[in-house]
Length: 591
Image (tube, rainbow, N blue to C red; front, side, top):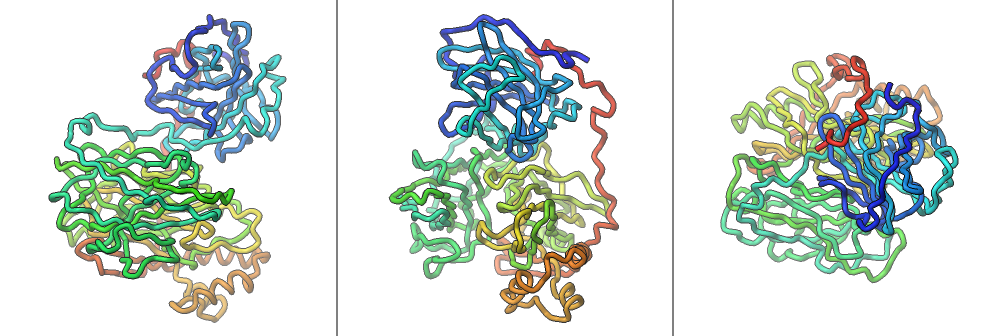
């Protein structure tokens, strides 16, 4: 096998006059990994490989890698440095919070390295799947990039000096990101609108949810939103954690510019806003709708009052911060082929979602039943719709999320699967291929939570300290449906087990008190029974209309027994049938 356990020692001439921030080739993607801008990574990818180039303001060693959770262990890493005109580069991995170990199979290949007055740059390439158990597979899910650097060169790869707490970190990215501006957008007549916080003075609290209203002006008829992008007041970038923009029925010009703390201090007359128009969270960038789609704005049937919810993260309790961050949307009157809509699926946002303590991987599920989808499609005389993009949303305890798809008793490939979910990196993610959902299909959202260290259960709810398990879906043709979520029927579970009714519209507090203080979470037999009851529960699905059914709410009771479903089994990996060695001459592999 090529380069098996061989240290790469490559001579190179140093381009001393070249700034370290000039890349050696054109890259489509980039990310600054630290707040100071000392570590920048660029990359391109194709169907089999990724080429990386890192630019680091150091004359010592550079560490870079992939981690499932953002920690330095376990991780798949490379380490490199330039010394006396030679480039040293090594494929390694971590097995503890200690010095990394050299991989037996060297699968990250150096293409170029240099050092100048500005710092160090390294360009290297690897397969998406190296078939090496010490390497992480690169997929279209969240990838946690980890980095480190040191001002000094080591004697060799076995004597790396600890980088220190200030010269290391992690950032979540989508390495295989298909979200890119289409060429046609620059040739369209575009109107630009900014929805901002309106010079809001951020409270000196560690977290604040602020909502501001915006009455869309008359723009002269139907347009399509073709993209949106975040806006930041300079210096506040790291304080804006996430935002959503929701659209509400009716016109409310008297509430234009009105503000209040979300969930706590809405102004009088604030309307219900079921339609999620835009979603973004820290780490995300612009979103471009595919060229044949656009989100309708300004038409007779389009909700015109917007509410932007801004979540500010202010752990230092800083005072006197004035913020005008928000979102910029671009609209065109040159209508595209398909109107996009938003559909929210998953678990109802309710304290009746219970996540037990001391669990390393507890799974909570919410379904969008076929009854809801089929009736909506029948009412609109359509047999299918297509999913183009998904934003999965949970809170701080979630470690993984999956949006699943069922048809005729068989599970189809996941619509989106993110086993390394990061609450601090949420955005609408375009699918590599549109997913067709047909009449009779069912959907579900599955969230995996870690509650290690907790002694009481977590509950579903609106605040960050509560949990959620939802997926926001951009789709076409636009369904007359906004929400299709479910929850297990707790009446069935608790009436049978405790002969008491812990679920009705007036007993949520009683239910939460019982689950916190009376349920014995140290009794594993009782916990196992609770899990079994959830897995076999009757579910109640709520269907909420968006447009012509704006005031409609339909509830179905159904039983979805996954034990009767033929599970989806991924096709065999190339690693099962091929040798993963590649030619070392890789300079032209990734374009």
